[in-house]
Image (cartoon, rainbow over all chains, first blue to last red; front, side, top):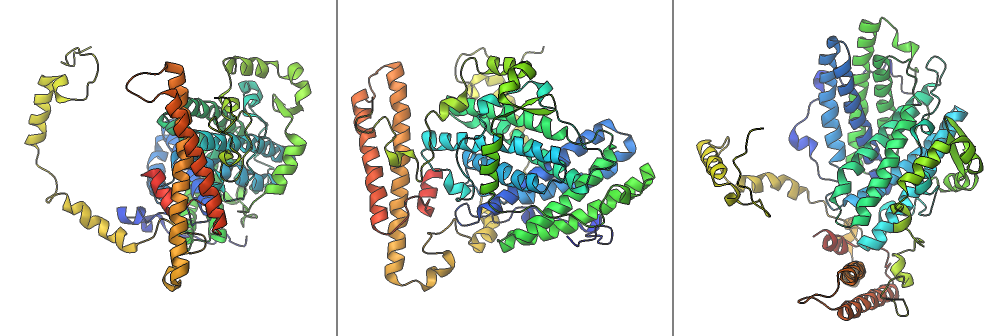
Length: 399
Length: 160
């Protein structure tokens, strides 16, 4: 993109003002808005919540001089997150929102995997992608079989609903969830932006499932959220380990703000709802304001030039479109991959090279796997599997 | 640890009589503090006006986007309303099948109790719900509609 992040100063922090009415706007339509509008809302909510989460961690662990600047930016981020997340409509149920979260994980990660310049990190994204892809299938089975509704009303034909790497084999020992990190001195700026984006999105997914899991009455639904939330925790572990620990906290903050500019810009570029597009454009300017605020801190506290770590212009944006063919190709080639330490291996080598993951998995699944239970024999069908008379009430069914 | 003063009661603890002494303090405290703003429940209604006036709809039927409703001829509009309501009923029957499946599961596990439906009654109603769903699915298709659509009325009925 031609946006020069050093030249464009955006909206100054003291001009970034809100009212409660401004924050709480008429939401989007579950039925009429494009699924990718919802994808963008969920993604940006995740990025803002990640900034608030990491900002608090910094405030608790760093020199007291950072606390006020962190608090100033955090206040605005809080209200940006509110304005974005409150665009979700009240008729979008927690399970429907879950389906949308998985669509974010599939389509955004697929775009990232294809644009990622580092081969190893691209492999990590493809590895995680096939797991979230499987979650969409499991939650769709739950929606069909417990709620009596069709998940495609949410994904709107853009994403396939079929098994990926089965969730029951995604359970790994912590030793096999960590990955090699990029080298901050040599990594492409897009690599850093990708890692920060996907880590943030997955962290929000984890937190969301941990919040809503207990809201379900059905015990199998409660178990399903427990199992998949555990994988989301593994995914956060995986993705955050991609980031170089040698980056200072302030450097990570600088990168996060850059990542937010990049993502709001991508959202604005693709947005089809004019009311939402206006918000993305406004927040591009707000994030540029944050970025320059943090650039100043970087120079002041670390005596370093932000140009050492930031690109002059932003790289190619995330594609908000269906990545069906890429996902299918990845599924065909890589569904049998497993992890051993930071490496990816074939399933046939897992017993030798990752016995700790097998032991952990056998323990967790020893009383059954909810993701297998909920999707036993499940094939997604337009309008739910009841169209195919798959019910105990169908004539001839054993009841 | 300091006692809460609550009576040791078994069962439901939601009422004032769970702990009369604490309840008395609670009432006394609430009555002693004046509200921070004047007026009553009508203030909420006044604040909603702005949102209501914006009037963004829940959603529309595929053949009848909200922006084209005003220009539609009567036949088109009537068909859109009919398909919307059929879609609502379709969703009701579909969800009903799943509810009766869960009920059957429960009664099979716990055994039949009285009062309450028998296993035979649950199977009978569940079978009818499935038949209704399939019939509506076919009817919507025959009328030129898309039975996989979640219509505005179906959506409202599912979250009401």
